[in-house]
Amino acid sequence: MRQPYHHGDLRRALLTAATEAIVEAGPAALSLRDLARRVGVSHAAPAHHFGDKTGLLTAIAAEGLELLAGALEAAGGDILATGQAYIRFAVTHRAHFEVMFQPSLLHAEAPELVAARQRAGQALSDSLTDPRVTDGVADQARLAAWSIAHGFATLWLAGALPPDLGGDAPDAAAPVLRLLFEHPPAT
Amino acid sequence: MRQPYHHGDLRRALLTAATEAIVEAGPAALSLRDLARRVGVSHAAPAHHFGDKTGLLTAIAAEGLELLAGALEAAGGDILATGQAYIRFAVTHRAHFEVMFQPSLLHAEAPELVAARQRAGQALSDSLTDPRVTDGVADQARLAAWSIAHGFATLWLAGALPPDLGGDAPDAAAPVLRLLFEHPPAT
DNA sequence: CGCCCGATCTTGACGACGACAAGATAGCCT
DNA sequence: AGGCTATCTTGTCGTCGTCAAGATCGGGCG
Image (cartoon, rainbow over all chains, first blue to last red; front, side):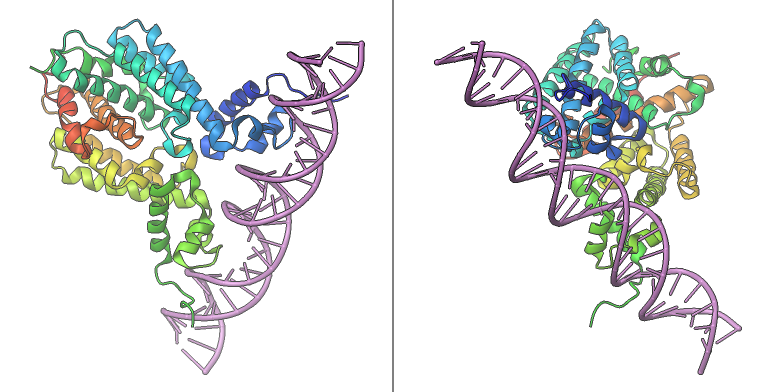
């Protein structure tokens, strides 16, 4: 009288268990055997769905990029809201975010990953286009916006920022983002 | 007719071998036994100097923070130069930089690490103090400067930035950093 | 309706790894 | 000269990722 032989949706269960494990101890400490134990399957079951450990992290990264693209699109095109949405995504989907930007953990050319990356890049580019900036420096303005949001999110997740910023990352980021966003564009 | 029993400076040799290995395959793929083979000692020798694998990464992070502090101080107080120095450090000491901001890989409260972190934080704070900004928003200006430099460096190392920026990170970052630095402070 | 084929999961094994314990060696200080 | 301690080696254990082979399920076709 055990669990049914077929899990039903083992792939999804493994992905969510993996994100929980990554939040707890980081991507490096992730163990396929531990995931199998958490979900209640044999130690080799995860490999069937993801090939290897890197494949699992690649799937998480791809999922994260898709989720990020959706979050950015939902921000509605406002630059400050986009920056805050980027940072909100990082803290609410910490596991995904931490894996997404570590190529050494991923199969960099996996089709699902490159497609997701392309989609997220497009969403980011669409959201960060400041109508006040002429085309010439638009790329640099996007780069600056992406950099400041990504930097704030990364430093926040690393625990490198002073604790007096409070507990809500997007709130704490707002005045910082405004320093870049709300000023007359250079020349 | 083998190597002498005592290596001479095994600790230093392990640290440099570790940085090379991290540059090649990332911190997660680091193996103490592989390091021992590279340096030509037994498989348990590294543990004597660093306790465990996390201890080795902690030592690298502390060393990186010290090196970063020195690089920032050498930038001479100019904000743009500091931002470029930060990014230059990230690409020239990629292994150190990747480890420094991943607390899950480190012994967070190791004395050498907290001391180095304090020193680097002080150097950063000293270098990023814009005399044009009044004290009230100075903290946010420092945060913005740190975020944009850190974000650019992180995205660059992740290979997430478009290739048409050229091969030199500090050069590519200069116009981006200027968008934040060279504008009248927000009231 | 029955069967069979593929997808899914299990079992077992192998080599590599981190960590620990116990012993060997070397340099140094008195 | 002699011992003391830091340094390094050897041996071992449990865990991990990965592979191969087998067991079990379920859906589609005859």
